[in-house]
Image 1 (tube, one colour):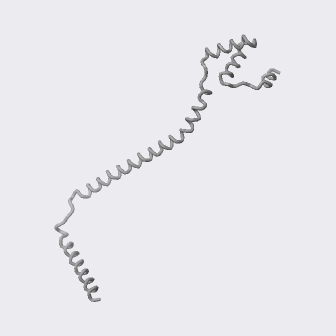
Image 2 (spheres, one colour; image 1 turned 90 degrees about the horizontal axis):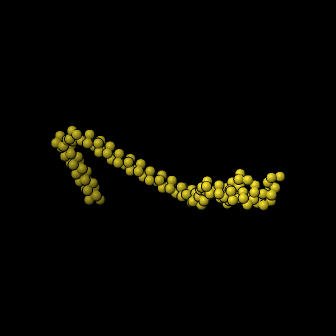
Image 3 (cartoon, rainbow, N blue to C red; image 1 turned 180 degrees about the vertical axis):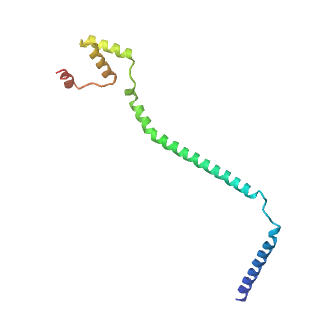
Length: 133
């Protein structure tokens, strides 16, 4: 038990001596006059870099989210694209005149049928038959 208490006393004396030496050296060791401005400037630069990296990472994450959100829309639009593309007016007029010549119901209704054919849309036969009644 004596050795443990002796070690404690030695360490206490050792720490006390070290603290006294540091206290005595207080006039010899002084910070530079521009230490505070340099530290503040370095802290500002590090903060600005960290903030820039955070903004960049948030922008990258937002771009990825938008990309994945737009993929289904792109797939949908590519599937619907043939329905969205309108035929040239010359093609419609030619088809309308051909249908008018075949059926004899005038160029206006020929144009309607031409548009229906270009959109791959046709009414069921009963609805077409009862359309004018």
